[in-house]
Each structure stands twice: as C-alpha cells, then as structure tokens.
Image 1 (cartoon, rainbow, N blue to C red):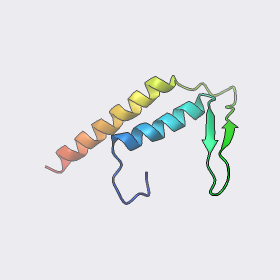
Image 2 (cartoon, rainbow, N blue to C red):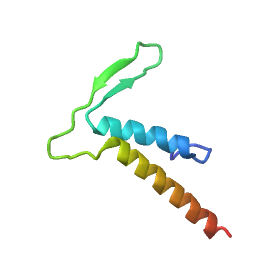
Image 3 (cartoon, helix red, strand yellow):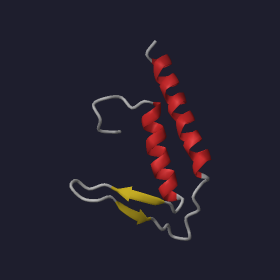
Image 4 (cartoon, rainbow, N blue to C red):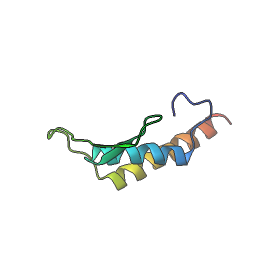
Length: 77
C-alpha cells in the first residue's frame, strides 16, 4: 500500500490489517508463489508478544484510517 500509485482506500486497509492481525494472532498464512501451488504457513509468535484481538485491532486500524483521511481533508481546506 505504501508504494502503490493509487491512494489506499478503506478496503485496502481492511485487507492489510486482516492479514497482519490474523497472522500476528498465530494464524495460518497462505503464500502464493508464481507457477507453484499455494503453501500454507503456520506463523508462530514468540511467547513474550501478546497479540491484540484481531477483530478489535482491524476495527481500530480502519477507524485510524478514517480519522487520518478526515484530518487530511480538513487540512486541505
């Protein structure tokens, strides 16, 4: 999202946050490599990291995105 030519929208933020927080919550990520079968990868986080509730963290990321966009819109006025 950071290097895209297009400005990210709410669906981009939701997709990234879902991936990030579900993986951080010891989930399973599917890696897709060109011309190969998808590979399921179990992600194990060290015990000293306490991940947030994924659903709450995703909602908070979207709210931050909305607030930043609102602030950017007011700054441009």
